[in-house]
Image (tube, rainbow, N blue to C red):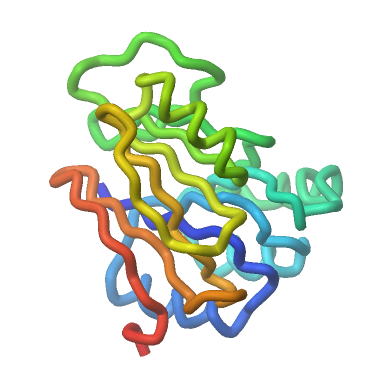
Length: 183
């Protein structure tokens, strides 16, 4: 199972289309978004052009949260998880959890959030194998205990080159993809 992790799209449809074209050639099983998709038109474009499950959390630029929730409910593949997303992946199935619960030793636990301070707290809990966050737009990988704390960068290309992360859950290999290298 492969997951793509994006953040800070900031309504850059052109970059989103590059990512979606890449995904058609390199299928992934689910998409996590660490916030700042921004407007419902961008959410609609993504939901219509990516058929697998999409999991969102809010960022500071996602100002019409109620509108985004109402709008996302029209797309069965779209899950808005509020401020923090918590998932357990077991036997190639993604399970949304609401808090740190018991996990099987063969499962993978991950969380995603927009803000780095809160992400670090989640990583320090020791419950998660991976914690993803956005906001700074700067790609980053740090190890806190056994947890990988990861910022996939900005798919929108704001302040930094456009990037996203790819996590192969079968090998636990994490990679950063530069959008400019996908063209």
